[in-house]
Length: 174
Image 1 (cartoon, rainbow, N blue to C red):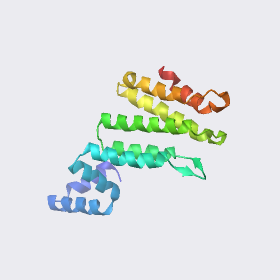
Image 2: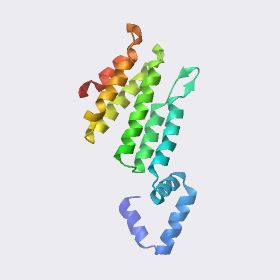
Image 3: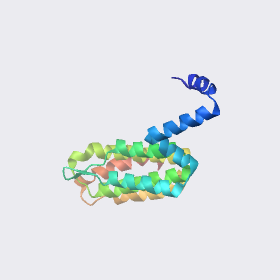
Image 4: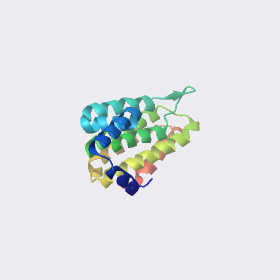
């Protein structure tokens, strides 16, 4: 159904029917409930903290004794948070915290079998830089990102795969 078709259908409803429809959607769909709760009471701090806890749980995920966060899940969580429209500052803070936690955790993970994960984290770092640049605050936050990437480097060259991937991901913004 297109937006136009939906608008036509909704225009035929009375205000009482619209309220009933919204309450019905609110009670049946978790995503709609979350959105309408935030719409009615936009407590950004509380919502950010709730999403931060979910992200931390995913970032610390271990599977078969290996650190294995699912970047697709992390991106979906950040997208869900963004859909609430909490404001740029809250989104940027949550993205930067996520990137910091991923680079810290990646430093401790030195498995050669995790290159796909490291590549995903590199793409996430590039996406974060693009997001910050699009909103005009990359210059303010890039030194922190550069520091996190540099801290992932070790003295043993064969362990620097994670650093090399992160470094090449943020290279365009140097």
